Amino acid sequence: MEQKPSAEFVEFDIIIHIFSVSATLVGVCLTVIGIFIMSRRLSHVKSYGEELLALDALLFLATCVHSYVALRSRRKERKHRLERITEEMFFVALVLMAFICVFIVYELI
Image 1 (cartoon, rainbow, N blue to C red):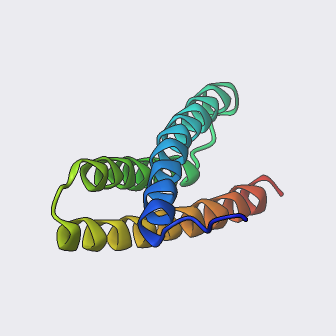
Image 2: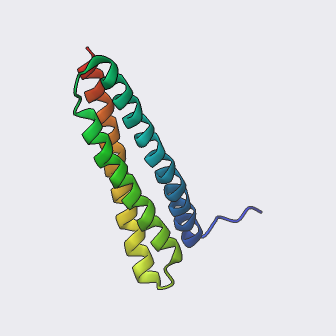
């Protein structure tokens, strides 16, 4: 018979995924900023997408740090509070990234 994973294990698994994905997305944001800088040198057009991506990279970095602190926390109450804040920050950063993508496409048209 198959056992269901405990709620604590599921929360731990989610926070590990948020940690790894947010760290990856910081790199993605920095890569796109580099592409913007190279394209600006070629076309001399300033884009607000760079500033928005830098803000999003900082938000993903904060999410990554929060998830690391949540993973290292030993007190259950503090750990649950940090996990909830981390999940909310990650969601906000993802929504901001989607907004930035739409903004960049709009700028290119």
